Amino acid sequence: MNAHVKDPTLWTDVGAVTDIPLRGARRVPSPRGDVAVFRTGDGRIFALRDACPHKGGPLSQGIVHGHAVTCPLHAMAIDLASGEFLGADRGKGCAPTVPLRVEDGRILLGSV
Image (tube, rainbow, N blue to C red; front, top):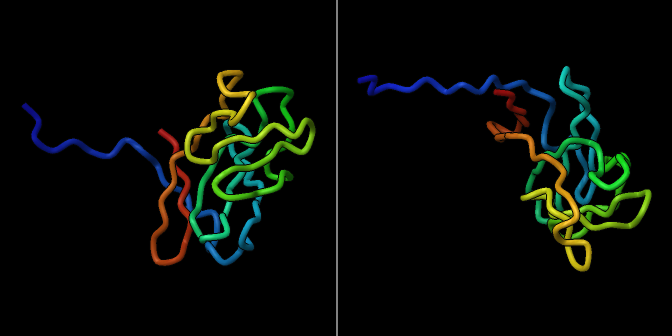
């Protein structure tokens, strides 16, 4: 039996938390497609694939409110923690979340 399991995630530093304004977002290119990194009004950081599951709109260009972002194409609100649509659109799709962590004020995105 292997008692020590190695973390399969590769972490990439994509910038400082302060590079993203409160209630703002940044697009980060990745080999697996663009990632939208969000900073909420309370300073929390989230990451989703930068494509709305409805029509592929760039979520990084949406409006961040609370812990959600509204797609700039069709005004569909998406929960930043789960990627799920909110409200009347719940159950109509999901934007994949991207693993992340914050260390010493730096944002690290993960890929397995």
